[in-house]
Image (cartoon, rainbow, N blue to C red; front, side, top):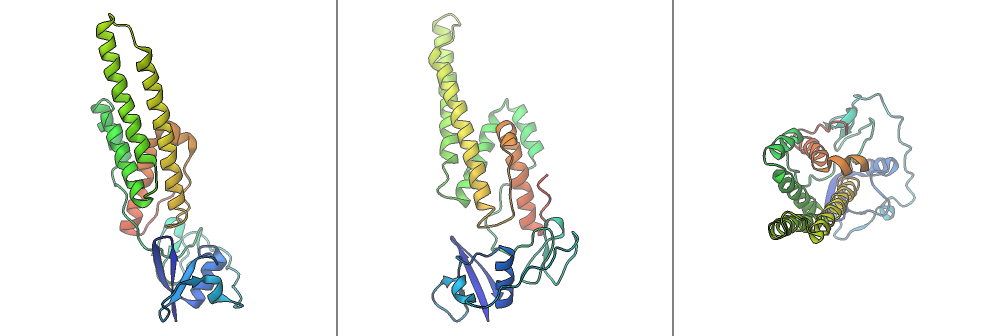
Length: 242
């Protein structure tokens, strides 16, 4: 008998009972996740299906690159598939979500420099829009748009007051610039949090994003990870986080 797993709005599987036990033992499927067999019409907790069936202890991790059974090879030799998989971080094959924007971070940097930074804002909105797609409740896109609006308004106010006051800067313009910076940083860290939440629950790939890299290089840093995730979805190979 085969079982399906439901987590959030995603459905995964089917898995055999033995696979279900193994994934629970590995921590990739929770006892609180919902499941149903091919003959069931209602979802029930995994714990209800397993009942008193003993959960096997995971086998020791094999050296990176070791493959047991068929399946698709992911990062570090890990195999994700409907068969037995052991490696650095084995996990069940989850249903494919949307593919992130696949554009090399170096091109984002180059085009951003050529466009005097305008492309950075545009691509930041692209990234925030994708995160909004995988997590509809994300506030990252709204915060980024508000930051851009504040930055534009600051430039307009600065230009007008400078022309009217013989080059003197307006305190209001400086305040708007500060507000734009704060909104942008909050938006970027919101995007970071939402990415980690999604890619450690719905599509668990153990994504860990650096706060320092987010603060200084967010647009390029996020794109680096979006590109590796996009490649994973297209080829089945997940490159190291780097």
